Structure formats: structure tokens, C-alpha cells
Image (cartoon, rainbow, N blue to C red; front, side, top):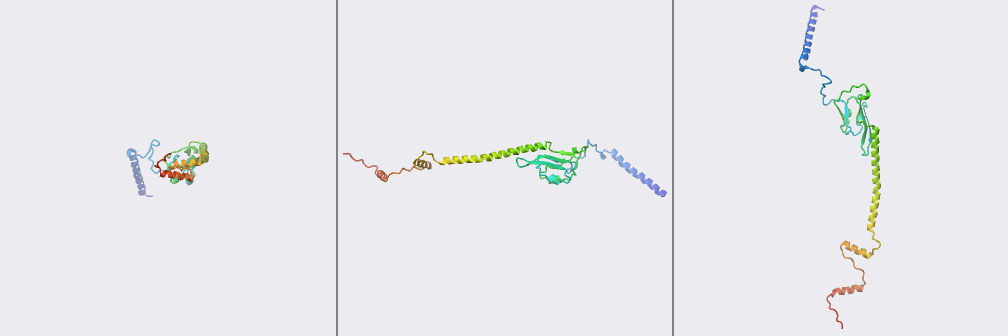
Length: 231
């Protein structure tokens, strides 16, 4: 190595050191060039599509199990039972964020959009159990027992309504028959006269002998005839 090459190396070292010090001095003096964030008092603004911790809206969730079936690492687990209204009722819904790989597949397949990514990313813990998020605080056994009682009450109500329908039908049929059959003390002629009045017509006259009918007709033809003189 010659003297010229040695001197060139010294000059290059001095120049590069000066450039680095100039950049360091600018960031140390100019407040606009600050890049250090005073964490945790200050935090960066999270992007809109950031995939943070998962959150499930229990009021919207339908317990369809699509998120459980889609998750490639099995970090989601849920329990559900069928309620009295034939809809699924959630008993438990847990997400292990320590196992989650934040792929977003469960969010994409959720049919009601109840499962979403949040902006959360801070979850330091010394216990793995704390990494499991429980979205239902109530004991699953209590929820199952309550739903079972509601189903039993609904079934008993339906059975009572079904038993009451034949009794009501039989009562209605009996009342209809009693309205159709006349009482035993009523004569056929009286029934026919009553039916005639109900129909808006005059009652039919009783059956008379042919001679009496003839005399009645002659009396109608001569209503103004003078009465016979008595001797």
C-alpha cells in the first residue's frame, strides 16, 4: 500500500465523518426533524386498515361458526344453544390473541360483520391465560340453564294451546246443533208459521175441508149482498 492510497483513505474518513455529524447536528437542533416518539405518552396514528386485536359484537353475532371454521390456527372458540325462538344463543365466545396471526380471514367471512379488527396492539403479559379474550362474562352453564327453561316454557304453552283447540271446537259444534234442533213442545204448524214470519211472508192457513173452502170463496165474491128478510 503506497503513501498516496494511505492519504486518500484518511481524507475519505474525515469527509464521511463530517457528513454524518452534519446530519446529526441538524436533527439535534431543528425541532421539525424530531423522529423520537415519547412512548407511552405519545403514540403513532394507526392506519385505517390496520389489523389489530379482534373484537366481536355479541349483540350482532348469530353464532354461525364461520369464523371458527375459517381460522387457520384455531384461535377462536364458541359455544351456543338453540333458543325458544329457534335462533342460536351464544354461551361463550373466546379469542386467543397470543395465537392469532392477524390474517383477517375470520373478518372477511363474517356474514353480519360483527367480527372486526381494532387498532389495539399492546398486550404484554407474563401469563398466557391473560392473552385469551372472553367476550361473555356470564357462566356458560347458567346461560344454558336459562335457555332450557325458556324452551320448556314455550313448549308447555304450545301444548296448552293445542289442547284447548279441540275443546273449543267441540263446544262450538254442540252449540250449533242445539240451535238447529227445535224444542220438543213446539208443534209443526207453529214452526211453519214462525218460519214464514222470519222469511218475511204470511203464515200458511191451516188445511180446511173442500166444502168450507167453497163457502168461503162464495162469501168473498158477494160481500155487499143484502141480508134475507125474516118473516
